[in-house]
Image (cartoon, rainbow, N blue to C red; front, side, top):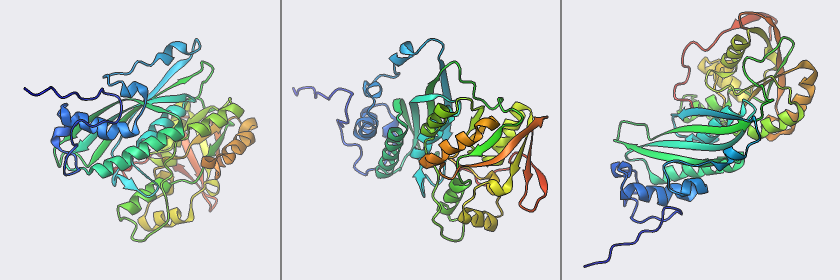
Length: 360
């Protein structure tokens, strides 16, 4: 009679059985059995090392909740990511998942601490590609100073998923005095933008072969919680923060105008757009005002604080091209106006259709 094999405990990147001789995801990786455990220990735990995650439980007990000052608020956001291609100039679906979720929580002025993540993997996905994505996620977590504290993996049959989908939840905390929100814009406020628009959309379009020419445009995918923290230390009176992702700058500002019941007027000449992005949009018949971004924020601030806020943004690596691009006008039903470079004025609405599907 042979001895029962003794497998190591859950924590640590130890693999009890070969992951798969073909180095690809197979249906068995979603079985919950030995192949699942080998994927968790041999791949995921190489990159995600939070003690809460490595404990091996189906949930994480976050003791910090009990240590928060009285009155602090829990801030959370859910997000899903289905970008194609999954690796693109300047980023990949893993970095996108971390940064996008961190940014959503940070836009309420919260201190982002934790993420949970779910992976939907397609049978046949290369393990080397998966590890590239996980490594990218780990690097983004270190940059944003957040932990992945809970995770899950499911595997679909080939053809039922496009390589990999990632779903995330972000968790952060804000003090009771923070009142940032899309409904807080006030007449007279100044609209600040942290940098050039449309970079992510054009980088993904190029990776798909949609441009018809090569460019050096990189996705702007980045965690913005550090930039937000710097801004709020200097200008705690910020009224609105928002990252203009799908739908772009115009759609995001229409949403804010409607939430706050104000008019917002933009100066087209003040909006920063890289020359290559502008050229690509012109060739494709696209408007950079509606292109997706993944590393830019809008800050709407009181007029007396605008210069201070702009200086803070411009001192940060992710805000070096920041600019004041418009102003909040009087109360209304919520409209967005653009003063064009030709001196005319036009009304901007929300994006009416999908210019580039599967963008984030």
